[in-house]
Length: 493
Image (cartoon, rainbow, N blue to C red; front, side, top):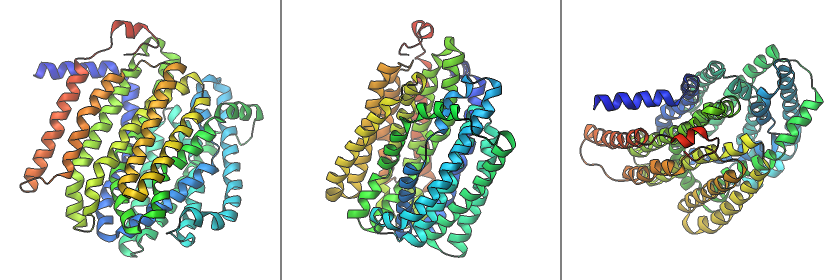
């Protein structure tokens, strides 16, 4: 047994570069801080917030996502793609140019949004007042725009320590602010929104200092044209993607009472823990794949191994969240949030689809053929709109869950099919499916009633996670890339 464990550990170390492991670990810490914040504060929120407060925050976040979708230019994507294609001397001018274009867009957009938002937003969000809730969200989105380019630069330069430093600072400020506004001043959902605004504003100052110190304050228009040519197909994709993310809440706001939306929001907050895991791994996964593809062609088969680990880690987190969410809700929320328990495995499972989207998206990034992304987003939006319109009036929040999973499922299938034609990746889709097939029914165990005391329940659930871990390690250990995969640039591995 010990020998097999050593062999598996050696195989894992041989699969990934130390750079990727270090960056993934540091980014995981940084992104994990947000997850830790959600986990640590969620019990407190369950005590001090009502289901209506959760619904107010969820619907306000929906309004923010809608604004951000129309507001941003998505030029930060060009930093990730072209940074290594420019010479050392041109990189700083390129980054500085993109930064200032984004800043100008943010300021100009603020003037426009402040003018039209009081008129337009009440049509999108009917159960939340514009002032003060949605007005706070306007400023939050404005400050968040300042993070796009600096974060893209830090990631592509693999300056993970800076990302984590800013994240940690924001974490402590945001946690302190939420505790103050929710516990001390008892402002409920409004207090949560105020705390997020404070954290976004302070982060924006940090990003401003970073960019002012490192990059020139001028615009080189040829770089702008180059970036726009690459990013313009991303803009409608990002717009549609942002809108489809909030379609469930948009339609729930029209047909479902605020309290029921609150239960759905609580379940979604548990699911967001797994979703944030995808985000943390993505920060290391995308730059690592780009670097390997461009600079280490003989090592391209490692992309498939990294995809395996990305999906496996998300599966572990999703399983843990689904199994233990019931205990947390009962311990802190008592009977107020019991209706959310049955929803959690389903809201959490959406993270699997997001992870697969992250992987399939790389075909288009590497090929620079981004025009198909808009087609995929249209398919996603059409499926999501039809399903939400059909199912939510009939089944409420269950209809929203089904519609969300259907929309993201259509996105995965479309990206996988088109991506294989645009730029095949050395990934074994069968092995990724083998990770997910057993974990989904295991997650449903979280809905059941576990017998025994607290210790017995925890032990039983940890045993489930341990057995699944043995299965994943065996799957990894006994399936290694073939020799053909290692010599081919596009063979399925």
